[in-house]
Length: 116
Image (cartoon, rainbow, N blue to C red; front, side):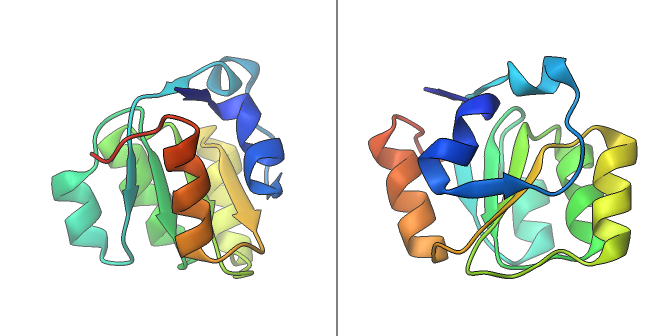
C-alpha cells in the first residue's frame, strides 16, 4: 500500500496544487489507468489512484465524484489552469510525472497498489 504523500518520490512526480495535510495521509487502496472518463466513473474505487494522460478540469470532477485519493497525469502532460484551480478548490491531490503511463502503473504495482 502507498500513501498519497509517497507519490512524489515513487513516481518522480510533482503536485500541481496545494494538498491538504489530511489528503496526504490517505492510503491508496487500488489503482486505475484510463483516459476514458466514463470508464473511471464506473470502475475506479474510492481512495484509489487514477493514472491518466488527460489534464483538463473534467478529470478533477470525475476524481471527486468517484472519491479517488489522487490523480497522476503521466507522460509529461501538464494539466491546464482550470484543472489546477479545481484540484486546489477540491483538495484533490493532483500530480504530474514525466514517466509514461506504463512506467507509472508499473511502479505503483511494484509498491503494492493493485488494480481496481
